Image (cartoon, rainbow, N blue to C red):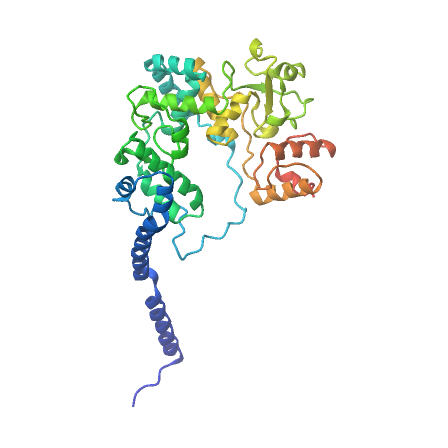
Length: 423
């Protein structure tokens, strides 16, 4: 007579069946098959989808086939959405907005880059002098961008660009953007400026030592060493000349500085920043704004336009910047990036040091909280720019105006104490 299973035994049998069922549905073998299928779909897509567009853009069939002969999907890239899958749902903006901006300005890193930059300024003095004469962009600014983007060409830039762009075009949420860059990359190969084996870049498709996207390469890369090729991977003159040409084409004003760290008196509202509120630098000076260095503003800058910049409101260093600051932002649309480049350029050119003002601990707000403040300000008629949980200059100055209107000392930056009051 067989023994009847106990309740615990029945539960174990049920659990075993469930586990076995789940195991039979596990995606590991399917994933391998899915990758193989996706690779096959990719090869098909190259011929039926991408090739007609490339042909229409003037790429020869021989060049097209040569470019993609050894190309494979790079499954290690971030933000991939393979065919048949859905992109991840947008994450709620509940993470901390930023760490303190001060962390961006690592003194150790800046000192190291500045020391190398000063050395390279001497060894490439003739090239930099010719660049400044040609494009009007100071050598220290060009060197600072070179150092920030690729460590003066010493950073590893490992990814074959065609692999990256083809993968991103075929399976990413921004396929149209990468498709344009991929077609541009094919034109670069067609031009003979670089062999495909040397055409390396970042995981996001930015190429060579200046980190140009292919469309930027076609517009701004220059053959500054005169060898008949635009080589931003190996030729230092081409790298430096291309950076300067980019800046000149974006509107760099010859003979002007990028900006000045200043002290803004308490009586002067911090809610006056932004490129749309420019005024002559002499007018800013007449309000009591002074350079922290103790020097006067250069005479040549007095009648020219300047803009207030307070990236952390009253909780950090303060600046009067020129239009050239916003040209630097064309390279990377970030106030902190442009300040990093400006500060590094000053260190290279004149041995400058860290900003005098210290960034306060302004990195603990949640983006969701900032977003709520932005929406409340919008509802009251303030122009905060884009409601995205990030405190851009329009949000900062709107907050400063709101604070003044409500009897508070304007700080022009969101903080936890305002959450309950700003409704």
